[in-house]
Amino acid sequence: MRRDGTERRMVARVRTAVRGWTRGWTRVAAPALAVPALADPAALAPAASASTVPAAAAVAHDVHVSHMRVVVEGPTVAAQVRLFHDDLQDAVRNHARAPQLVLSSAAGDSAFARYFAQSVGVTADGVRLAPRLLQARDERDAGGVPMRVYTVEYAAARPVRRLALRDALLFEHFRDQQNLAVVLRLPGDRRTSLFFASGDTKEQVVPL
Image 1: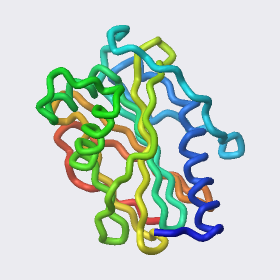
Image 2: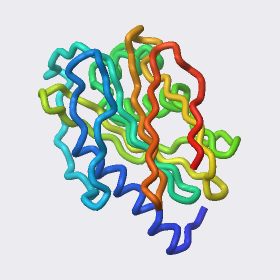
Image 3: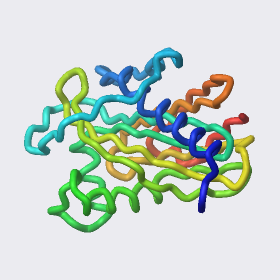
């Protein structure tokens, strides 16, 4: 589908906002979880590229949690999700039935895209949207734990007025998995925080 100049600029702003958020993310250090604060919207800027984090350099962590940031502007929904590398690699390997799969690879990205489409549901005004994987990278959190970060885009037929989100990532893998999501509506900077605990597979609705 061809996009005119206005839509291309809008999509670029959404992607920039999602990338800029990641600089404010930190690892949750205890089971008592709280949604981390977002960066000041005025300071949102593309994050610098992170170097590849070898899977063999994994550092132990004591919680199972993911963070998702979702930006909605017009008909475009862009999401960035951040997960512990080792947790996700095990889950994607099981889902793909490929015990030797390397997550940080082209094959790993394809396997993740299939796993993500099954585990995360995004519905706009009653219509289920299909995800498109835009970017994947490795990085480390403040404690040196390897993370995997993905940027995903959805395209609705018209400006989104009501968004429903389901985030069941890793629920089949960990009984204590907790997924945090923050939805931002642009323009207007309206934010909604969502929390999904393991076993909670229902959609949560965000009026926009």
